[in-house]
Image (cartoon, rainbow, N blue to C red; front, side, top):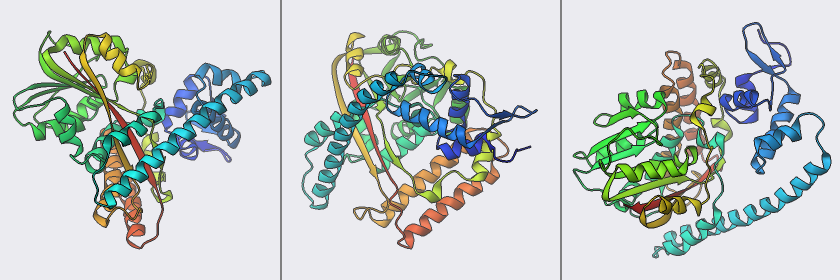
Length: 418
């Protein structure tokens, strides 16, 4: 039973704008303990706990390690150490502000050129965007099985690349019908599905170390072989594949084993494509925030102990320079890099109604897939709530009541040949 003045894990996570998994992770890391645990093991939090997690999230955003955060937020820490660290991190934040200003200019320039019907100078725009590399965060990169699907779907619909997201991406690997393709870290199967749709005669295999991802993909993506497996110990013979491709995997596994195994299983002359999501900018509309039904649903989903430790989430973050360096170190030649950008603001005048409503519907689909991927028989209320809130977002858009919700995402593509 809930005590007065206390928040459940789901309510507390919604207030802090993080996932319940993140709250539990901080609990296990002794960063944030609940103020009250009832006889059934349910955790409850208070307003002072909300201040505490806000401090943790601020320090994490500023680049402090979990060890540093633990020292700075628990017990009697040295104020001078905190002050000196904050001065250093402030300089880093100033650098990031300058980088984001360049991104803003690049986006505005690209939009202006497109609106005027002129030829876009992609090389110049990508040079600017290349300056904005920032490490991925745990909450944004591994919150649930469908973050990967959402990025792929949005890139396919709204990428600034004129050729289209999938045709451009597949052309980088010179993919042709009949090839043997391996996707590593397939998640719920969005990219594998796109590959199969474009190359129906290709032999496509996809692996992931999360059994829930594999179960979901096997049901929803026909014609692809899905296997549970480790990216650092691929269960395949040498030289089996023409192409290997991965999306938001490199930050979770040892880079030498990751690229070394791909080199081993690839045929001579085969391509390796490594896609890495860089830090995104997210500002959602208030009407699409977490609902009570969604919070209750996610609170009802049991979490396996040690998920974050077992999956080594974001254990190996790499900069834009380190990714191609590791690829070269593991035997790949002709290594090259590129960037794909999406800018999603439904209320922006540059988007017509079809495009804007498509963005809203893509976000709806993401939330619905997240619920489906949980393999629960109790998701009907959450599904109804998701549909209601996105129906409301569409109503506001059609009524001209602008919310100015926005999302900017940058994905790096590193390409190498064996």
